[in-house]
Length: 345
Image 1 (cartoon, helix red, strand yellow):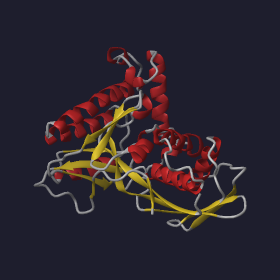
Image 2: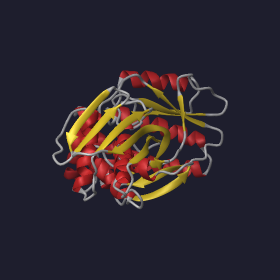
Image 3: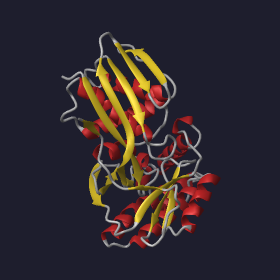
């Protein structure tokens, strides 16, 4: 057992496979270098004290009676409570939180925070080594669902905890089969450009509404997950359930098409799939906003082979694939697979 620990949780980029995770489909995310760092120090007493350095704010709550709170505090309190409920020995601690991933930008700074908090607290109790990372991803997802109020799936947490440098992670959310896919871009570059429109997945409108619609569509089709639905039957669903189902079913196919294109070095095909994903998210899933559309057009005009909205939609960043001869806008941030969540020396 140690008295100090520092953990780093990475943000993530999802190459393709959006809104498929909670529908039992496929996705292809990877962790990136940006993320959240949590420094934990054991203290006496029975409290957890959390400091959000970026915001200049503090939260203090009893370890044995954790109750909900708004904003970033919900992530801290939820992580502490869920670790305790899972049987881990959470110690009284002071937590200092700092991040360099933009909030509301579609890079999942929220999952980065959850996994960094969990690993730092587990390190203080001597339980971080050998922890089951898939089980830990599920625990962090419960924080997001039950404490924060965002009905997300497991994509962000698995990408942050199980991703590998140099590869994207093919996730089958029906079976939780995980397979690294080498991301050889052959001189091409992936970049993210912020649209300037932030999104809040816990706000209810948009993301949570789409998930409820997908649940209704799956129930009407008589399947466990919408990704298992029959396309012909999905066409007979009432609007907008038919369009939500069409997006999920076609997006699922685009994931394996993108993997095949990467394996054959066909980056033009990858770009076309990014475009198709965006059109589906915009027209079938109704997940776009004018700022996102303007940002995408700017990337395409600069020479991108393809571009799409990223993350939960309704704002955030746009992901684009650029060939070697084209220059992205100056504000665009290059992204590539980085290290998964980890303890720092």
